[in-house]
Length: 209
Ligand SMILES: NC(=O)c1ccc[n+]([C@@H]2O[C@H](COP(=O)([O-])OP(=O)(O)OC[C@H]3O[C@@H](n4cnc5c(N)ncnc54)[C@H](OP(=O)(O)O)[C@@H]3O)[C@@H](O)[C@H]2O)c1
Image (cartoon, rainbow, N blue to C red; front, side):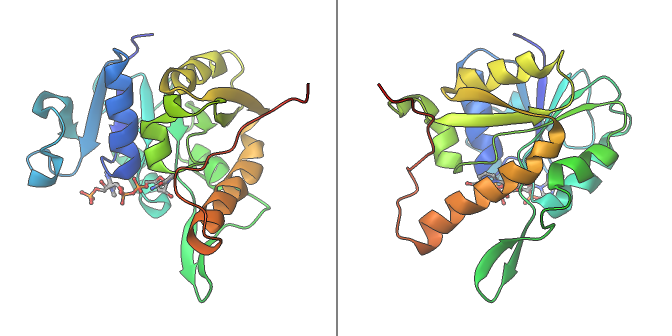
């Protein structure tokens, strides 16, 4: 698939995804505040652009902090017809460390969809660490990655992008299932930050013999 991809945010997640998709031959650009900032020196300059200009991108990947995702989407203007892949997790810092800020009656994915009318919003690539996204093909058996979204016709495009990274993509149902996938991310974060697990662990779907 060669649909142009615009990744908003070139931090841990944006860089990991962008480099991996570039290596697969995808047409990736990174939307950032300052394309000439030295912190982006590890990315090809011709792939860096303003985060406020969608140009011809058919797929927009949100890889900003959750609080920045809505303003970032609004800056892009009309996203009708686009695929939006939401990798964010609505996290806040409390006395016991990071926690989910939206609870379980809605989700970041659903809230983001309200800001992008006419776009097909998918929640995925939020459930494991950025390093695992960069090296997903190194897991044996394959690590799973759930994909939630309401547009069944376009879901295969997103599943294919997830598979290209090396994950086993699993359809988790409608976007509402982001209410399950954001807590799953929180579980991974808890395991690695509080329970002593290394950051290279990831979840897998197994079947008994
Ligand atoms: N880190 C992980 O392992 C991981 C795993 C799964 C999901 N996530 C989620 O993925 C998201 C990104 O995490 P991260 O670790 O990659 O964060 P990060 O390293 O802090 O990168 C976030 C990026 O977003 C950019 N940004 C902020 N506001 C922006 C705006 N309005 N427009 C354009 N770009 C903007 C920042 O650029 P400037 O600093 O130049 O503004 C920065 O490059 C978060 O929602 C996080 O919860 C993270």
